[in-house]
Length: 439
Image 1 (cartoon, rainbow, N blue to C red):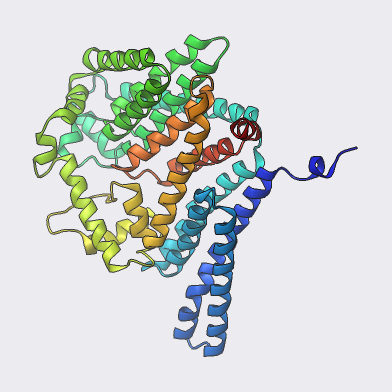
Image 2 (tube, rainbow, N blue to C red):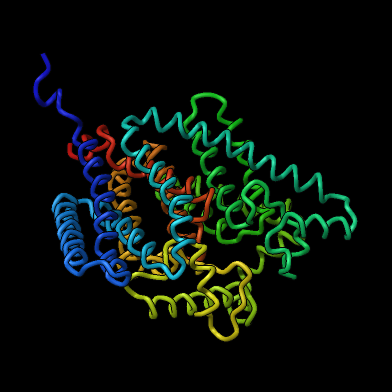
């Protein structure tokens, strides 16, 4: 006969359910806080507005206090609740409410469904491994399609045909320094999204090769396709983030592996890449890249200064959640010499702060850093024996590094990245790892 302990829901599932409902009610409470001002401005009686305000404050304080008490050892839970609440608040107070509501339905509700579906529905490592196999094969096919499209349409074509194809298929074809690269953007429409997606796929295939009992070399060789796709996108941020994450984790587990990976990467860059692609990556090591006015680094610093103008003007609620709100409001806050066709902050935490306010930005940072810290504590004692944990910490480390110089929560890629964060949450709470850690 099962005991009460056996028949009770797992502690991890109960905790995640509390977090999920806390995020939901935190967002609703945030809406109720701001709604009275909207109602009062349209003629609703003051006592109804005051009642809504008190209800919202009570709900927010209760939710925040409850989550704070339960999340003393898990600060990422409180950070996630704060971020979700501020997404709701910034949506209602946005300077472009129609854009905000459309993006909230289109993006964030999908992100929330994916995140909550994985965190609440997956409680075994075997389930995560099946999911990783599906993601790896799907990503491999997508990257192969991108590489095939690139070579089929562009190799051997004359200049008129190539430029016409670029005008029809590449988002930022007006950038003269990138026109010669002729990058294929299929299937994610933008080189930053495709580059980060390719890096995730390559790391997943390398992990599957490391963890496989058979066909190990097949997985490792297949990782060449997403790596080649990443190189063709000229996305230096994703390449640097992936290389740094893999080398850091490999150095802490096996220094020979780190040396081998570094040597192999240098050989590929030196011997295999086309000259214009190799030249683009060589600029990482040139001082002029960080000093001259119209270089990539100076382009980012101007974006950071413009984003700071947004934060300073609307510190509490932000300009409104979503990258589309950010793009629409960017010209009002841009520094004098700044021109961007598709503006973004080139930094995940700065843009989240500009979109959702200081509280939302801090909440998102606490969530991501807290989750990384929790995973690290589980990974460190068994870093030489658990490939899955090394893979998870590599993914999260890459997101942290790339987040310093780019913004990747855009449409299709955002769904994948929230799935990665959800896998991190599940990994950090897996019963077998928790039992080993406590023992």
